[in-house]
Amino acid sequence: MSASTSSPAAPARSQAAFERALRLMPGGVNSPARAFGAVGGTPLFIERAEGPYLFDIDGHRYVDYIGSWGPMILGHAQAEVIAAITRAAERGTSYGAPTEAESQLAEQIIEAVPSIEKVRLVNSGTEATMSALRVARGATGRNKVIKFAGNYHGHVDALLVAAGSAAATLGAPDSPGVTPGAAGDTLVLSYNDVTQLENAFAAEGDQIAAVILEPVVGNMGCVVPAMEFLRTLRDLTTHHGSVLIFDEVMTGFRVAPGGAQELFGITPDMTTLGKIVGGGMPLGAYGGRTDIMDNVLPAGKVYQAGTLSGNPVAVAAGSATLKILKENPPYEQLERMGAKLAAGLDAAATAAGIPHSVTRVGSMMTLFFNPDRVTCWDDADRCDRDAFGRYFWGMIQKGIYMPCSQFEALFFSRLHDEAIIDETIDAAKEVLAGE
Ligand SMILES: Cc1ncc(COP(=O)(O)O)c(C=O)c1O
Ligand SMILES: N[C@H](C=O)CCC(=O)O
Image (cartoon, rainbow, N blue to C red; front, side):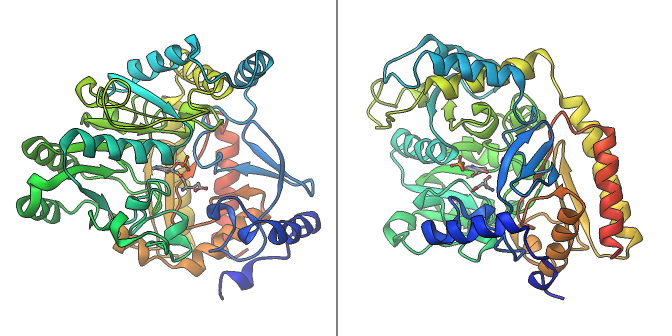
């Protein structure tokens, strides 16, 4: 059975809303990841979100395991975050001039993230990675950059090569429109492959400006780095004078306050942030050592700018979110709930006789429909996509909203308690058993 034949008729209002959207926007969406392209059927149109739940325009409630693709670690419409947004908006939504609030958020980021001594606020994760790459090239005077297949760093031309996320889901890992000039200096290696890395540096280490990676991948499903891979990355980049960039847009403030670099004890030269750092508003950040960041104009000569950068409403949301995470850290609870959910999904798939593996770091996780452990894109690519589609739609019918692609990690919030995790596992048992 194919994924599309298992997708039930969409609820009537979502169906009508999608037909309207299709006439107005390419594919009916403003970002391809939400188009249900890999699982077939019609995307559910959302009316509102509260705590761990999403509500569609047909009046159905879903336990949310997307969390806006990562930002909503506190749950939706968190009261203190909403109050901070409201207070900021009442004072005006954008000034195009510096504010004290920007410095406060910068201090919160610098205090939490080991590699960041100075930081720039931007408007998205894409802007953060694009800018970090430019700064790394400007600082080293080199052109080449290494990325890893199945990692996604936003829609930066130079990094939209062998990309994960919707690019992988929808079969466009190398996007038309990216010129050979833009991507010609990008070398693509296999994640977790130490030998490939050593060979690449042996061949052209003195030309490599930067290595960028997701230090826990979320964009080919959840894939965990081997410690040997991370240590080799750190050693080779240090030895060859290349800038090591951890793209922590997903993992920053998610797997630990200081991101994957805190969790694994490996400090990169630069870090990119997004998602949680903006508290659900459009905000990204990039930062690193002072000697690297002082290349950015007007301290240095590398150009990077933004009319809305440091936007007061987005800064208020991010700052309030980081304050709550610091004062009341959810990470132990997220780890406990994550372990419980992973064990439950694993047991459910085993009981149903479905070839699978589960990969997890804290509150990021993927049930892969592949019996082997997934450590790189080639492993992820071997998953049974049709089985994933059936699982996705089965869970939707039970009120559980999982990411609509095998190549996206699920995320949950501090409000996903024991009862919600139990409800999810029970649903998975029935869905995977074909009930
Ligand atoms: C690891 C990673 N880097 C960069 C990005 C780009 O962020 P944005 O979608 O905010 O541009 C994303 C998500 O899209 C991401 O998951
Ligand atoms: N995997 C993507 C980012 O993390 C999903 C969000 C998007 O591109 O819309």
